[in-house]
Image 1 (cartoon, one colour):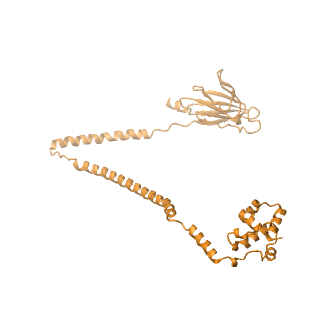
Image 2: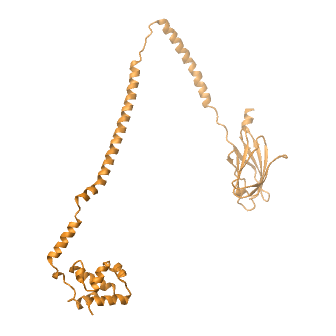
Image 3: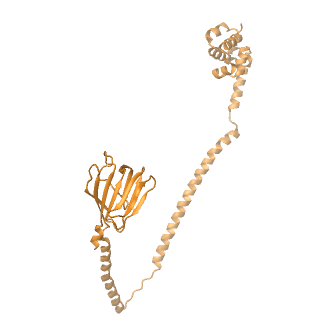
Length: 311
């Protein structure tokens, strides 16, 4: 059995196809067929014959050293190959790999484009800076020319000077009045902010608290935002009911209760409801996360200290 037949039998016993062997050894399929047919002239050179046969043997599970020793007479030796043929192949491969002038020119084009773009950017920056500097210089010159062209007329008439001095003194006496008015405007006190204080803290089981709301200003508005469905009652200390029912998520409730001095809030689930008084968030007097404190009742006593001060 020859070398090629033995390699082929080992491949078929392993169940390896030529395509799979090609993927494993990275040797072209036509060279693998040439080895099995012992047609070594097809190989790129006798120098590659031993290397290809070794790779083939390892891939099909044979010992390459024993195989090479057993069939060393059948394997072509690199010394047998014509030196002129090798030189011709090497010379041809080098010639093929040498870049042509046209390829060198095309490879230089991207570099040339980048250089042109950089030069263009530098020119645009220079032009912009120069134009801006010229405009600023023209503005400065125009200001200087205006100052040079202004003529100063001197009035030597003493009577006119007396009148001028009197007017200047009157103007100087009027200036302190403007200064005083500006100081009065600066000394105006800022509007007092809305404050909420706890008057009486609710305890279990009703958690009925009483708060005092001061500095509400000219209007009084309540806003309720619920995260879940929350039962809510909003009443005054008489018979007027501003709201009663469920507060729904994403459906804020806004109530204008201007003029009301006492407001009652009955909140079924305080952790899920945010209350604002004139955009100031109400902090529950009792922590709504405590056991049993989720249902809270709150009295709001409205006192407008700003109005009392004005009166």
